[in-house]
Amino acid sequence: MNYNFSKMSQEQAENIAVNWHYEGKYSFYDVSADEEDLAEFLNPMERGNSYYIVKTDEKEIGFFSFDENGGFVDLGLGMKPELTGEGLGLEFLKAGLSYAISKYNPKEITLSVATFNERAIKVYIKAGFEPVATFMQDTNGSRFEFLKMKYDC
Image (spheres, rainbow, N blue to C red):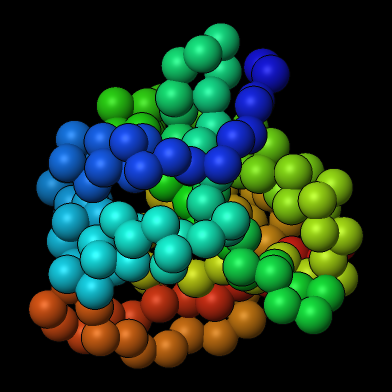
């Protein structure tokens, strides 16, 4: 599948914030689930040049954020809700890794995932990420455990 990355527009950010809603426990990942995250996501200055929409055949399938800092990239991502759980995650993730490596040439790529999201953790491990540490973070009106993972480039 051919993945095309382009800088996220304000219209695309607003569409994701308003229309992308995940089922059950995955509603944790709705952009609107946390006021601070929502405000950052909708602010073009906060998003900067680090958020990208990913399309295949002109259909939006997800987004990535790349926070580059001195040879390291911290990755964020979201797949369109109706596409999750369909076996597309690994290929989508690999496309994001490939894009990050070609654009930033990092030594290492990291990401953080809620520990309850076993589905995503399995995909990250299949892609070559290794668990590094767990930590607690206040978000979405409560405190949650996250797993930090790394990918050596």
